[in-house]
Length: 289
Length: 332
Image (tube, each protein chain N blue to C red):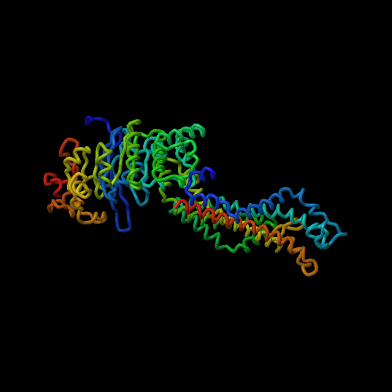
């Protein structure tokens, strides 16, 4: 499609088409791709078993054999960081995109129908927002015990609200547009109008937001694990690794720093993608108006 | 056309009301129209006269609340559309009555391919397979005069010009060959040179498929060129309806005369146009009688009091004016 567009479009449009993959978006996507691939092929990338404890080789600084050094139990930190991708990225992905799916759907329905349904859903949203998240997760953990399922439940209860608000706001703008009326005059079922016609037009801001949300959710997971509320040792979770290393931070800096750096790099990649997408969606809207 | 010929669409006594905070207004008050298959009825009137509301009412797409069809019948091919269930009505909308909008730039979804949008109705209402739908989409675009449709079906609306988009919208409406096409100011947003092409296209398609057409316009010239019958609307009411020839030769309502005097006549020597004095009426505060009375040069005191109704003054020529004999064209 882009090549065809370039062939027939005006010069201004050519620049737009080329700019669709901005440098930010390219760099961010490439970084994320490398991280994801490393996570998928962790057994091939990681030189050691992330759980194997070698008491002859504890607290070694980074070297050729142990790229990131070893921790107090003699585990290879590089291997643990690589396996950590699987946990952090996967949990981060689930707690970002599952709430996004139903959050956007709730917002779209509220915005499209308005009236009583809108009021009910928005009051539900206010309640979810008003609840302090840390209290909620501690309650859930008190009931179910620490672990990833507690995080899922607590996050799923509140994380949809932002998506619902974004989608509702965009739907309010979109629903009065001519193409929506046109879809109605063509006799399409309402569900089709909402999810096939309106959704592609209202999803943009949620997708951009989801990238920032993804970063924050990885930080949240690390933070909770750091506090002992999230992923439990010996699982190689980045936040938990930072927490384990904090006793040794003055003599053995790498135990805290390098897993921390993994969080920073992943966050940067996602932020770059978010920025690139924001600009790309912004441009597309300009091109239309 | 014989008088007893069955009309495809007959609207009788339609009243569409909107409740506002300040009160209820009737955007359509006692509207009567008839359209036969293969014929075009032009609806003329200024902004806010209820033309678009009429189109939406026929499709039962009046936003409710605040809108409501409170009286009347909409007989389409013998059935009253107002008695159909929502599912049956959806089927009518998708297959038998289609609509074309004023602004083609906004009536297509900006993020979906044009080809997909044109053929979506075929798959939703007729269960046409994806492959067949694609071929039919290409064929429809070819029929409305889009060059090299095979490659263009994959493009997006922002890549097309307004005139081309209106052709695409018409192609979308023609998918499945509707019996009635509601064209709500289909040429208003387009350049003058394109306007003619679009009107010619609509007439050509009508000839080929023998569909009926309701052409809403505020442009008398457009209506004069394309329509068989004309209805003039003002303040939600039909003021005059007649065959195009009768209406333009011998208008029987002062408002129609006013409209004609306010457009330039290419044949006549340059003279000042005569505007209709005053403002369009406030629908919230209408007198019981003729809504045009306050602006009418011929009005007498009873015009504002006597409720109006369409009277046949010549065969097929109806006017709502109490004193059509006072009218002389050119001197309102």
